[in-house]
Length: 240
Image (cartoon, rainbow, N blue to C red; front, top):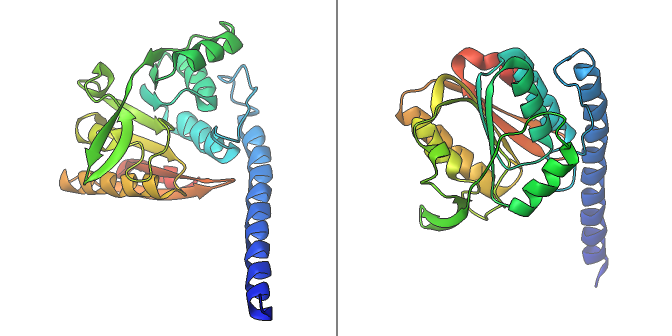
C-alpha cells in the first residue's frame, strides 16, 4: 500500500473514532439532561432504566418524557416492548390514559414483566410478525390484520419494533397514519439514522400530505437518531 492509501485508511479510521466519541459524549449529556428533567415528574415513581445497545438511548427517553408531560396524550400505542415501556405505562397509570404495547416475543415479554414484578400494570399484546411487500421491497412488520391496527385511534405512537429491515423498516406506521391518528397526534420512531427507517418516514410524510394533514417534523440525536412527526398544532414538540 502506498502512502496515499495508508493516509486514507488512517484518516477514515480517525473519522469513525471521532464520530463514535461524539455520539458517546452526546449520550452522556443527554443522560444528565434526562435525569434533571424527570426530577420533579411525580408520575415516574420507578426511575430505573437501562438505555443503550439495542434499546432506545437517553435522547429518545428525554424526548418521550417531554412529549408525555407537555402533550399529555390519552391514547398511546407502542410497537416494541422495552425501556420506553417503563415510562409509558407509569404515565398511563398515573394519568388514567389508555396505553398498549405490541410485542412479538412471548419469551421477552415474560422476562420483562418478571423484572417489573407488578410494580405497575403493563398492557402488552403479543402480535405475530409477517413479511410484506412494499414498493417492491420486502419488509418485516407486525401482522396488519391485528385489532390494534384497525378501528383504534391514537394520540401518540412510538415505533421501536420489530427488527430492522433494509427497506421501509417498521412499515406498520405507514398504514397506521392512514386511519389510526387522532386530530392531535405525535409519532416518534427510533433508529432514524438507518436507511430503512428514513424510507418509512418519507412514506409517512407522503400519506399525511395526501390526506391534507398539516404536520411538523424534526430529528433528535444522541448515541443514535430518532425522528418526530406531529400535527401542526403541536409544533412545540419539535423544539425540545
